Image 1 (cartoon, rainbow over the protein chains, first blue to last red):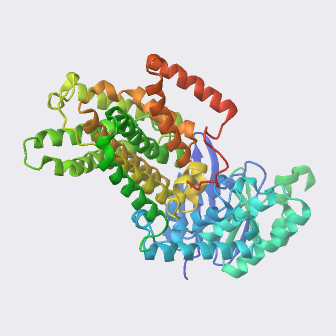
Image 2: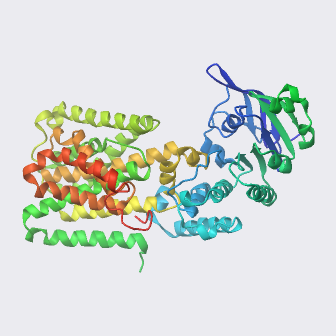
Image 3: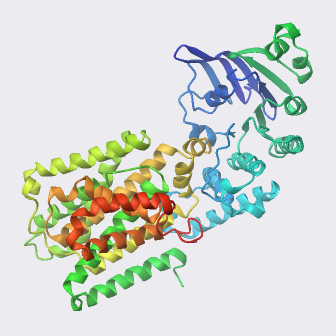
Length: 257
Length: 306
């Protein structure tokens, strides 16, 4: 059997006395759309931070295409195909919309320090290519008209979208979305669901989605894993999760079951 | 034109500097001296701007790198005095000073750039003081009495030619896909790292580049004043350069150059009150924060147009 794109095996992380994620085992296959849900403080974002290399698990293994990612810097993992967005938007605020994309596209621009200084033919070709690519991406996601605006001056919804586009510019295999629907109104949420489906199809991505909005999660995820207090309490299709007694208990309390 | 864009400006700058150096003798020597001070300040401020402005790492050690470069190139020149064509080695001694400063920058930068904000400022401040104390206690470079009799090689041509080169290098770096990484680190380190920017390497690169040009500036300074004393490189000198960067607007090259010119000329006009410079700086920065938080010279330039 070939190894799945992302594999978490008994992953545990402790901060002092607090076990934020405990014994988490799950997989994300190529092109799969998996949801990760759970009440506040369940360890969803911590799991993201471990997958992207920001935190190192205390024990257990995280594998990308079968290779253990322990000790690999986040920037290296980004180069290997893991991209993410953040719960609280983290754009490069003082850079233009286009430059936000260019920074992420740096991974595929071979020109380095001395290329930028010499500004020769190879550099110019490479810069033009990067820019063309970035503009194409912005056009697909309807942000091209704002390309020269400062990222921090964009409206909230556009900032969320730009963050996703920036992640795509690294050309990932796996995209981690941390509460992309937070702060959106219902029509924006519908747009977002369409957007996620679209990028998944178009770029043949695997997506791991942390989200509180059940309509979004149930609407687009093929499989859902539920965390509570750092432990996985359930995993299955949206239908299975909706009527899973442990999940209902975690969200609504034991009396509701 | 065989050269386009930024490169053409670099050539124009160097040509003007060389031209100026031919007519340099006709000007009042005092004015030429002040002009060289201005050129050196431009190199220092522009290179510090890469570290403190564009990359957002608060370094207070620029005078230390300047001292390393200054002492290194002055030492080489003094060793070569009496040699038939000693002056020909001046550019090499400058380069050696710059490279040594860059190397020291690497040694200081690799461990300390893991720190953020205030901590980095304290470490670099301490580094600057270490350099000063080492110079003060090393007989080979004159210890406390300083290094005397350095040949007068620095002229308008070298100073402004190298100032043009510094400006070219910093703006070319920043205005490229590669160099947008510096600003990305400034804006959000975590997001930069997760988008494939190796933040540690980016910060060290900025630090080493800045240190290199500070070293070059130190070499020019040594062959301009013809005398180096450790006290000339104390932390107040670092503060001087930081003030230029803050006043010009962090990350705004044009503003920083203007601030470097202004803050170098001002003490010349205000000789009598030069002792109170630091009080004035403090007031200026407080007023600046209140009235023009983006820098004194932040006009409506296109953002980051440098």
